[in-house]
Image (cartoon, rainbow over all chains, first blue to last red; front, side):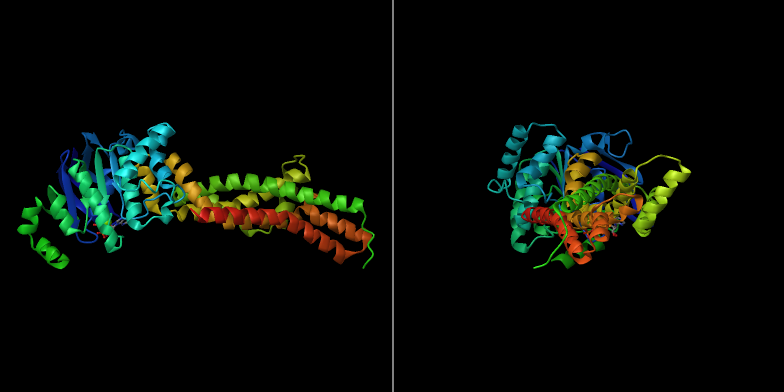
Length: 240
Length: 217
Ligand SMILES: Nc1ncnc2c1ncn2[C@@H]1O[C@H](COP(=O)(O)OP(=O)(O)OP(=O)(O)O)[C@@H](O)[C@H]1O
Ligand SMILES: [Mg+2]
């Protein structure tokens, strides 16, 4: 379970998160939508401790992410994250990209790590690309590799930050299919996305961020069907 | 075609000078690169306040002509510190720091060029700062910085000619000694140039080879 309570965060003068409360239960898929600069990416990077917070708390399985005593490297083993772009380690083959962390962080043997990596890469449809370098992959393949790489750590939570927004339209589908597959397998996920159709389909709940505030959160039928705030109504009108 | 009084002994003498050039350069580039990586990481990682003194010293080494550094260092070590240090040691020490100063900038630039999300991806997988550095950042920075680093190594090799001021007889100094004796300046300089080329060529080719290999990634 991820418990986010009253989280505030500023970059200098700019307050980016203005008291966010959100609890994500195991097996739940929450998508976050909202305008540019509303703090969506920042929240994800606070959840795995890449960014510090100013106040409030984020707990993952009861463990406080921002407590000085928390071993972040250890905690991150169970939180996978995939960014919009620049996920790949370009100097390593696809297989090496996926085996690196299991070997170095989880101290797996090469054979063991490769077995898991191959399984995950097949899972996302990259079983034929093991010895390819990421530079030779399409954007969609790179994103799927990044997903496989995160999955190879056997995370309990997956965070996705607009993983399709840097892709050509014809490549978006294959990556979203991968996310759908994960959701159907019961992975606990928080997905920041601009794909409204996708959000409607996979989410248990959809959260709408506006200027650092979680303005609305509801199951997709409700949020898309009967938006309460004027901001969300405007946002949805603009994205259709 | 032409007559020369250059004998086989003289060629051996030149080759010894070339050997000294290679030795001083190799030591300076090796030590300078290790120090440069350390300073480069420090400059990148430490806040501006902490990094300022290091930056200042490195800037000194980069802006004062090497010849002056060698003469001053030699005088300082001999008369102020009253240490008995061979010209060779002084030459290697000064040239190493000179190399380190340039290398630190190259390293810092290389690290900065690694996309921050790539590093975040590494840390997000549970890798420590050190694991991120050794497995992701430095390998990528090396690829980015290699051409500049090769340029630096070649430059240091040519600049090493200046260590004659601390009584180290390297290639150029050997050539000058022969010129004084044989009075055949153009021919000897041509041979000296050929020696420099022979030393440089493998370094440049090796760099080219690595670049090509890595660009296939
Ligand atoms: N490291 C940083 N330093 C300073 N300001 C930052 C930093 N990261 C983000 N910001 C600012 O914080 C605000 C929120 O950024 P964030 O990336 O969380 O928005 P977002 O909702 O993900 O937007 P988008 O949809 O464009 O990705 C923006 O105004 C951004 O400029
Ligand atoms: Mg964002």
